[in-house]
Image (tube, rainbow over all chains, first blue to last red; front, top):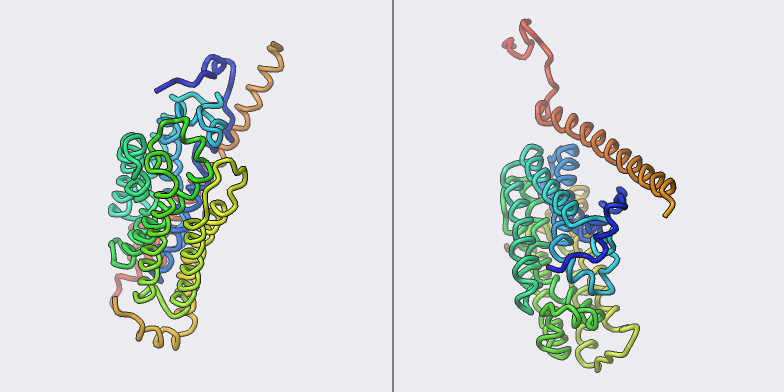
Length: 320
Length: 60
């Protein structure tokens, strides 16, 4: 691992609180908090709000700790990429050792307190998620295989499982389907980003699909995943957490996703393009898509609570 | 390099870090307090009796 060339100045530099916060990868943390929170709410009617709040904080800290450890390990390649060169370690704001200590502390703290606030199952799942993300994805898969994000994406899919376990102390078919949704969403989401930042990845020698198999193969994979993702997300309609509203909305959202993936597939890729409009459209839409699906599940949950007649109506739809 | 400016900058960052740490710890203490109440009460009111017969033990 190449050390940051800015380390020589660090004895004269003091990291600020915001530098530590930047280590947490707030965008990823946001996704974990939202998906876990929704799963927590839709799985149960009786979850105490303080236990929910404490558990969400632990899940957020666990996600943040993973982010810090990922930045610690990848500081050498982060230095080389334009997108990541301003991160705290390559930028010289924080030393590798400080990031490592911070990440380890947050990870252990979050697991212990999730066990105390919620239950051992959710803490075990959180510990597994953090370990999987760091040891399997960051330290092994990322630099070894072009399908790193396919398997490694499982780490980002665990929060709904954890959230469900917090409120029910179980793993159910519904939580597994939520896991599957994010698991299948991650590759097309990340590969569309890789198409935009292809030049950056070519410098680092990280085996991204765009480098190992080319742009055409990546676009085809995105399209295939969009179809499989559509099937997995629509299936949720036929479970206890689904309903007519979710079913119709997910049909529309998935049709748009597949359409954007198809447009990307049939249009030629211009590596000299500075804007990558179609790639950016798909990337940004994928974020909106996931947010909307979870929001729809939340709306379904509250609609059933507020309108018992809708709950009775929806029972005809459930077959899982 | 202006050492005074550097020292001021370092002190400023340390103050900001200490403030964030204090706020985080304080918030965490509050959360632990309320989670403890939630777990102990388990939906019922907590009874604070010591060496006195609790009403809940008396058969109706």
